[in-house]
Image (cartoon, rainbow, N blue to C red):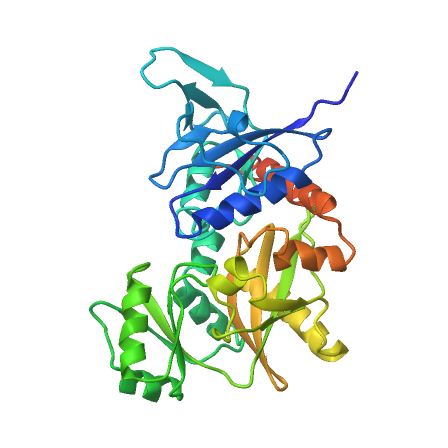
Amino acid sequence: MAEQRTRVAILFGGRSAEHDVSRVSAANIYRSLDPARYEITLVAITADGHWLLADSDNEADSAALVVPADAPQLVLLPGGQGRALVVHAGATRVRELPPFDVVFPVLHGTNGEDGTVQGALELADVAYVGARVLGSAVAMDKDIAKRLLRDAGLPIVPYLAMTASTLVSYQEAVAATGSAELFVKPANLGSSVGISKVRNEQEFEAGCELAFRFDGKILVERCITPVREIECAVLEGSDGNVSASLPGEIVPSGQDAFYSYAAKYLDADGASLHIPANIGGPVTERIREMAIKVFGVLGCEGLARVDFFLSGWDVFVNEVNTLPGFTNISLYPTMWEISGLPQSELMNILVGHALARHLRLRELSFHRE
């Protein structure tokens, strides 16, 4: 008798500026899950938040999964271990899908990586890959994350946070950060969306206007020079053991001179990736140890990519992604490949961690004796 396959629902798309990146990441994860071991259901989330059954619109060899224009809508029900109903538009009948064993939320940025979807999955009582609500929310908000890292004694780049009611001038930002060259970015976003490098008042105002398009809170950070961008992948197994990969280095090219959205996803020559990073053994181990500490300080679980700035011998924590990119050129899976962990086995570890954590959480008591 054949062993029963684990039912995995892959969530992709979503209400985020990183919608299209999610579609590419999800396609790569879809290809990496062993079909002999997993029964996969594809769930597309449209840009306006509808959950759709997307199995019939996608193939395993797709470069990017398709969010269908017209498909059965899904309703995730609480208390049923991933129970879902397929609702046909205009119909009165519903069809119940078998319960999902685990959900893989391949959603980058807001409304997916920030604890919102994680909260919905908690209510639905279903296992899911990645950080829980708190870790997701904390890591997504770069301001809150930096405060926690600073309090834990971890080195960060000088910065200030602004909202529409707490605006500062370029001169005030220069004084606060100690640099005339600055980065302006949304506090809650990824994939380098909405980031500007600024050097004067005019560029500063334009950068703030751009960043405020994506978030109500923005960060202004000192531009560190010279700098190397180093990233490290962190993985938690089903036994709770946390490990870090060999670090990788991003070397941006072209006019951006930093790892912009275009360099990541649009320009094939936008950056070169060096894995493992040529930074020497002592620095490599320092970054790996620091990545694991960051993972714990921010309450991450399952997986995370920790990004660093290296300037001379000084290492600064830049940011943390709890659902990093999984495209075929993304650093998270590539760093594990170079570290000796094939992507198919990486998927097994991530799903195994989600299932084991769910069992542990179900053993907790939520009622007073």
